Image (cartoon, rainbow, N blue to C red; front, top):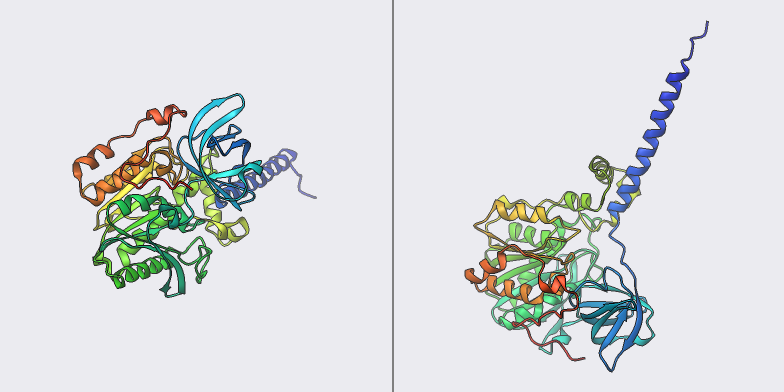
Length: 408
């Protein structure tokens, strides 16, 4: 006699299976979203007045953000520099137009904001050299801005290039430091390296060490390392592992990705944490390649250990970062208060701290380089929503420690 089938059990099993399929699909979708760098948003251009030095945009989160920014148009072939918000009305957002470097902005109908601001050291009107720097992967391009015997090596984040770090140059030049901006493996300018783009911290620091050796050959007596976003983990690895670490004076971290797993979990947004953690497990499994893990700009295995520190560290961190969770930076600083200073910013996006408040950024870096503890105490105080942040029509103050902005 055939066993009797319980219809209720069949229905329950089917519901469980269907639920598992739905959960699996949602988890895989979350994993793909976490693996993909956030898409760049398009902002419409409503009008350009070159003679008057203004540009009007449609109202978007980017066009409404106070500060100074790059604006890319003509599918990335055109570049302009956009300044403070002049006014917001029903017709859009009117902003200062600081200059057009390439392309016909009057023909632009849309474009994208980012934080670079400048395209090369030529914009600062100071002597500089374009060089080929030797690394274990071969020669890579680098910019050298000569100054004193103290050198700053500026390391951009992943999915970016050297232009990202140019914002630090004016303050460093004003302080009398030489500046070196190298490419490194896998960034599109340098050789690709031997491994996947998103998991290179164990290799990338070697290129930064090559930059330090280059600076020493040029006469450097001490070196400070600067890193943006994932570049922060690279310079920390260099400070910990380099054979010439004795010449490293300290490390400056802008919007640092100190914990790769937490940075990826943050990309899950409002998705429940168990599903985000399941998605993270998928990305680090053998199926991760099918979900886009090879394209990630953050290594989920990266986690900076404050116990390894034996050098001064300055962290510049936005409380509104959205990519690198600020609580991670605060925990890192609290673990080693004798070595780590954290300067908070309010209202800035990821790696756009200088853009929102260049005076605070330049001032904090200058005070840290000068070991001016009184000034650092003031900058380290909790950041509040400044008048500049609260009132988008108020122009950003020019950085007092920096050369004037280029006129072109």
